[in-house]
Length: 194
Image 1 (cartoon, one colour):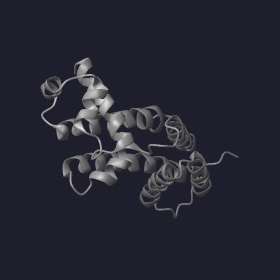
Image 2 (cartoon, rainbow, N blue to C red; image 1 turned 90 degrees about the horizontal axis):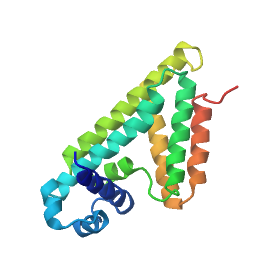
Image 3 (tube, rainbow, N blue to C red; image 1 turned 90 degrees about the vertical axis):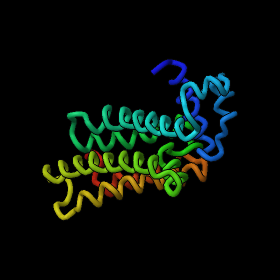
Image 4 (cartoon, rainbow, N blue to C red; image 1 turned 135 degrees about the vertical axis):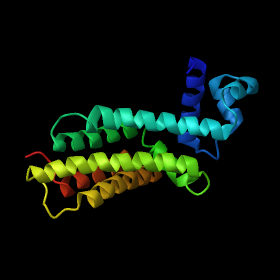
């Protein structure tokens, strides 16, 4: 991929994250990327084509930051889950609690109208669930989580709590909302260190 195409995708991802897919106009993308329409259409056939590349970029970034750097590491499951929560909080702090989760926002906005993008985002969330479930299974094996816990349901619930916390944080423009709910997650899932 050329540096110019990467720049367009990156700039578009920032705009879509802050404005939403529908509210991001092609003219905004052109201005932000410093390109003309001809250059845009050299790299992308349409805004939809660019949106597909943006979703791939966002998924790739989250997989790197959350999966590769944290959940796929050969560390204790409690540590991995705590580091995941810390990393997610740090990412939102960096955004000043204003834009929310880029993939969560897109999932809400495009789920009805863009089945290809919906399926890609859904696949990412499914992979996230599986990685959390693996950590929860390990906690059960070590006797740190009740054996009666359905780890598949609990992994989905953890993501729902995280995404819901980010949504409430974005609405209130207050990072403390996310901190409070991650504290509840740590307590509920027995992640606090003794």
